[in-house]
Image (cartoon, rainbow, N blue to C red; front, side, top):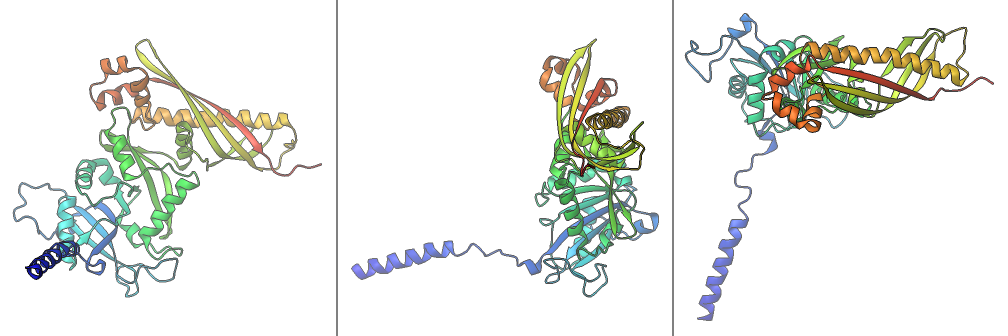
Length: 406
């Protein structure tokens, strides 16, 4: 009897253990996955539209007449390097670490299904780090793009979404000397731009958060390609009503970050003074105070921008910068000219009804009665933002001037 009980107990333990050993029954090896590292999205030309594969439909009469092209950068197993190296990154090279595939579709999901039909392994977007869209897509089809990306659980909220000056597909074929994988180079460029104060931390999740708020409009990096290899951060692409409305200049990124009080400072400003000649000042630190009131039934905001910087360069001038008075004069000149840049940027966004600064969120938090009375949807604040009074005051303090003559 004891032997029977011991035998049954052993069988029960083995059965229970088998349940714990079944955790990998549905595993998929990484070599059997098509890992998409980067995507670019463009509007399709009539010639490209004629190449649509019709994987998800038969009749096109009731479908959108516009097509998009999606270019995917897929990692080749065993070829993605761990560091910088030589070699081409073009799609047809045998030594390329990525495989570049272009497909056409009515929508983004339609194009991704067409992509799956052309590759053997199941596509995975868990490693998607960079999405680049053309300006034409940003100005007209952001709604459907956001809908697909938000519904897909594989999309990381820390993915970078960028708007390109021209065709977005050209960024999938760049050959940067510092990195064999174009997507990883673009990712590194944006991350280092954040660290060095060249661009705010604006991931895909941050973009969606701003787009969802009634008191703030969204923005994205605006990039351009130079000399087939150099990627230029060419400004901010800002949005209103779920579509791109305008862009800024590169220096205005620094003005935007100053209004937001985002550290560290990373932009240098070259300007001419009345008595000191031409000077270059680099901003290192930023701090901002904001006050708000309701006057005559309209919001009024005052931004005080406190900046710390270095005197980087002083061109030949009859009057040397060798006294506190001379430094103070340069600071006043900088305050006046930089204030004009900041005020102009705010005016431009007001004309476009795009509150990328989040001033509406300040009014909502500090003046809830006004907000409840006047704002019933995001469009209401975008209209009011175009007519509010905003004042910017700058205070630059130069801490370092380099070596001094004695």
